[in-house]
Amino acid sequence: MSEQIVNVEQEFSIKDILKILPHRYPFLLVDKIVALNAEQAHIIGQKNLTINEIFFQGHFPEAPIMPGVLILEALAQVGGILLHLRSGREKIAVLLSVNNAKFRHPVYPGDVLLLECQGVHFSSKGSKVQATALVKDKVVAEAEIMLALVDKRQI
View (cartoon, rainbow, N blue to C red):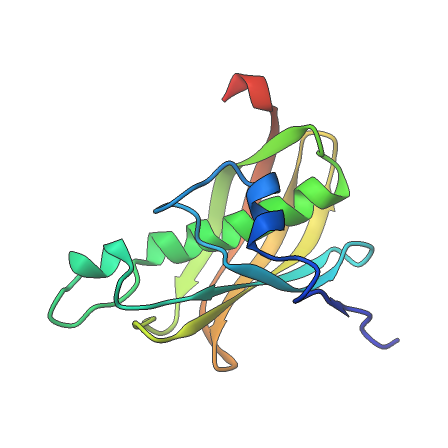
């Protein structure tokens, strides 16, 4: 069966992301959603990295690399968008756990980080996604991420 991921580059912009995620600068780590198939529980987000990112100022300033924990946060944000679109429109997805995280290659200023999440399990309380971050088709990080749905008023 062929993959039916819809290219949503022009339909799902930063404005749409801001309506779903509560994060704002400097903690919003997703610039746009480039592919989405809610039925197959698959989503790909994108983060364009520049030297102006605040974390590059202090994370090895002489040889700046993106902190691994922020790559995981970016993946969790994309997973949260998928969870929101599938089940929790009146709720917010929050990070519950990260398992089997592996960092394969550093991420540098100028890289385009693709953030891919494949849903493994969804319920009324949250989800589990298999998350992979890529730069130029090279896996830079991967993890299993669990997200919980919480009422917006609880945050």
